[in-house]
Image (cartoon, rainbow, N blue to C red; front, top):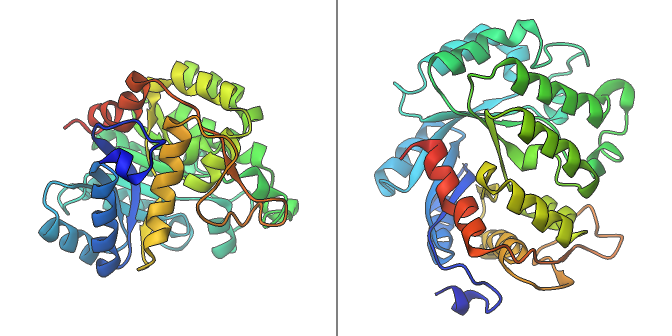
Amino acid sequence: MVLSLNPDLVYDGPIFDTHTHAVDNESLDLMVRIQKRFGVERAVLICHSPGAMRYAKREYPGHFVYAKYFSGVQRFTDGVDVIAKEIRNLKEDGYDLAKMQSAPVMRARAKADPDELRLHEDEMSPMFEALGDEAVPFILHLSDPDTYYSTRYSDLEFFGSKERDLSELEGVISRYPDVRYQIAHFAAQPEIHRLDNLGRWLDSYPNFNVDTSSARWLSRELSKDPNRASEFLTKYSNRIHFGTDCVAYTDDVNYYEGRYSALRLLLESDVRNMPLPFQDADTINSGGTQINGLSLEDSVLEQIYWKNPRRFYDF
């Protein structure tokens, strides 16, 4: 089946996609069909409404693990105690874990002061205590690509620096060691020059894993030095989850296929300078993004694709 998709793909075992979103039910049907073509047997579904979860449970029993979505804006509008209460009731409401999108864009949407309610500060402790007390795994997206900080986040007075955001993220991980974290987007550090710092975190804090979302960002950055990237993923293969960040919102088949193809080619193949199968807005004016495959060993792929998520989500 794998070779019929692309002869450069080599892994033929089960895959667990630990980072997908549900927005539209018809689009979810399409995403699931494409997942199955690419070997995805289980997936985390970040539900943007209770209706999305109910639909997925009815139509795809056993396929998904369900994450309740929390916007990073919510702490500024509803308050931290409201979030903590929802987390304490989360499992009763049918969810398995929580996901928060707290990238700098959320602070902008809330028109919040740059120093207000940083996640590692005392005011946020009720949320993290609830996560720990209830043994709720937590997917956290806090920072973004380096490219964003030089373009859309270039107002340093308002957004601050990526280094400040990474310091906040490390503060969260270190302050609340009883929480099980899946830190999205390679903990915002797939850039080659940041891998040493990410390695330091992985060596220092055993309570978090990272996922490989997004396909665009990971493919672009790790392809810049495939030897270094392969070495890193092999060394920390027991701490990495496969994840695409696919959002079920469109009927564009190429949207889903492109992301599964890109990440699988990056991780499995030895291709060189293969164009990313969809547009990368960050490189559109500088030659586009090319994939340079990491040729990971089968045992490493099995860890990242299947064994790590099974252990993390305990099924």
